[in-house]
Length: 251
Image (cartoon, rainbow, N blue to C red; front, side, top):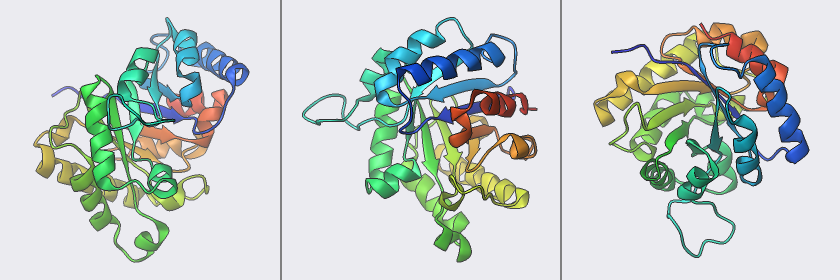
């Protein structure tokens, strides 16, 4: 099979107004966003209020667009929610589902994440399904068991390379400046691929991203680890120079 193309995805979280988006996207395109500048795929996921705006800003560039969440239903009486079809209509091609901040702040279960992933896929979006252990689970040596459980509960059994990305984000590493060791990251990704093979039968093509305090200083070594097919970047994606440096670190 063809080699998996690395994906560098920027999750802006609840940050950015129109003026911020214009400068950030403009700087990013100028640096690495023109076709052929970097070998990896570049993705930005702004807040829902900026998806349409950013779609226009990215027109003609090599950077693609995603949303940070979607509802499991295609439409209906769900005040304040955004459907996957709405994201697609606004110009998105990806949707993050199951981020730990959604699981923690909104109490999302594996079953709810699964339904959102299926809704994203049904709308023609690539679902980025996030999984990862808490610090207590990490300290207790439960990381691999937690990942296996979340994969079984959150990833559609029909997942394929064209419809699904899985992002491993240790909850304790997000925004803290701390990261697992390289051996721990490699072991987690190998385990994820094994569990995906059990679930889908097509694990070899599904891209696996690492997320959690990825920055220019550690990106190169992380992106060269076995079974790491890119990064889901939080804080560093709000700085065009940092995000570009991470993109350039792709092997």
